[in-house]
Length: 355
Image 1: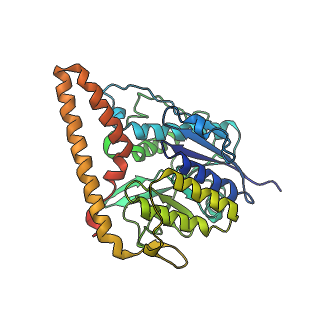
Image 2: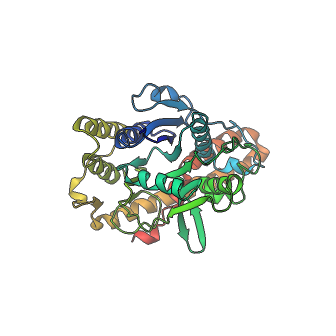
Image 3: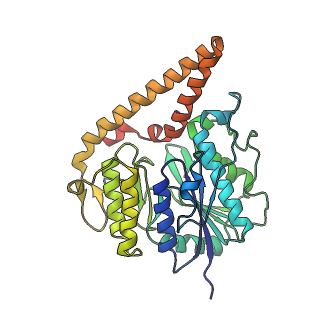
């Protein structure tokens, strides 16, 4: 009996080695259960060549976005999210055109540590006749569609326009886009491309743990779903801590041999200035940071928030100056590109909750 086929789509900007680790895990963890194709979308210009030829990546694509967008378009406020959404569409279209059974989307920090989650969800998609399986985060009365471990049952869909939409139309420019980024784009996609009853919310993240082993309150910097073997992490602020946690989980992945474990850890070490801090890790069935490091991390987050606010205000000032002195708009655009790249990291850290 042939194995079901799945395309793993990975969106990456500048964390190229993380994308390689994500591909390495997908190919080896799922090898005995799925026929796996890994597609990476290189969102940063001139980085595609650094990914082409890596043994666990089958194809490298680039997003379809406009280099310059009018301020009248919502999309200009968060080009990072636009690149991620275009990555989702490009990978999904590739999977559909190549008759893949399933499509799973995430980014460079979305890692598959065990096949049990994919086996569970692909079975449910078939048995319950669902098109989409995704996670949603609840904040008060608001639900936010999660962009990691987002599944589509391509065996169910004959819609050739499933992954097509115009860049400057509402499809890429939903209301409140600036605040909600990629999450609003995926919600917009679900509302425009699926029918009632076709979507399964398989987790609200209350079954996930954060870097301290507590129930997840925020999407960054770390979350793990022990039941399904899904891990997402972002080392932007806490390089040492996240590097150490990632390495621990790789070391204990039973689907990798020692050579692959070493390769993955070396890729991570090459891409970060972080150092290993094993003394801050609680050892057990799962690995978490010792809660005594909370106060130290709190001040790191405060620093990041201050930097983010200064850059945001400076960008706005430059916009106003550009009305009188047009050439200053160049500097404003540079700042906005930086902000759009890191906006989610700063916005989603609620420092009041980690005291």
